[in-house]
Length: 399
Image (cartoon, rainbow, N blue to C red; front, side, top):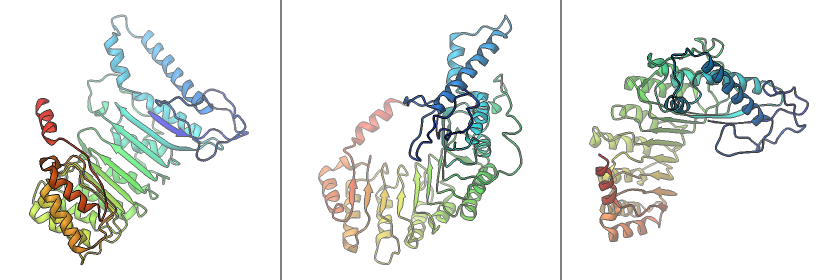
């Protein structure tokens, strides 16, 4: 877990955790420290605060262990499991401490990154608690790899959150510009996510990883909220989500005239009705003059899908797409060569960057080289020498 924040300003009150006074100079906007990160910055006032917090946590855990019943035996394995579980309910103490720091004059918390947690709350409730406690955050990145303890009543010691951190009242407006969330498996609450989005009017980038909704209608509710409340949104990313049943919602996004970059990474876009969906998708993109980047890695586009996408760059298109990522899409050399010829025939400076990683181009090296040579006349091509047969053998060996 890491957090970047500012030191107290000169003349500010001493830190409430470690009692350290300001050193007499507020850092510039570009300076930052890393809290509980892998690097080791200078031990400034902010780091001493974090160290004091962790020392307080260790003392608290030692007292709890000392008060344990004589029949309770703490083994090395259970200690390792508690370490892997991260902060647990101590996340609420950390939020209180960070909120106290951010409330001091000249001290502003700008970015917070939480990862690999066993969260004491479902991730969306934890996100609500964070933006409620730290409304001045600009960047929030949070990833939870395992379901919350609330969903597992067999887990002991699941302390509830303080009432001032979580509540049912509306979230006040915050300053978030970038929000990234990685979810554990399980359906998520669309209304909870929408409540965060509605309070984040300055949001410019949103990334959802492994998000599951109960129905396409819930996903549509999220997209409608983005359209109505997040007018500054420029970049939207979805990774490892099953959007096979959300084709109308995908078309809704591609028709959005405020988004500049959309990513559908491993989202199973073309799993159903590809012959009908691809022309609809191409038509939506041809009428969108603001979309600059489209990333479609891992969607099994294939040669037929790639040739359908070529029509986005036809003479009658209003598209201004300049970045296209079609990595990991089962594209073969003959399909890529035909794609290049179609771009040549239309005579457009098609786009700036084309990413082709991990496609089946090794099946005919000569044709692949010719296709890439032709493509480089109109765009910058980024590819690799991926061995598809070896990759398949490696995949089979792990099954």
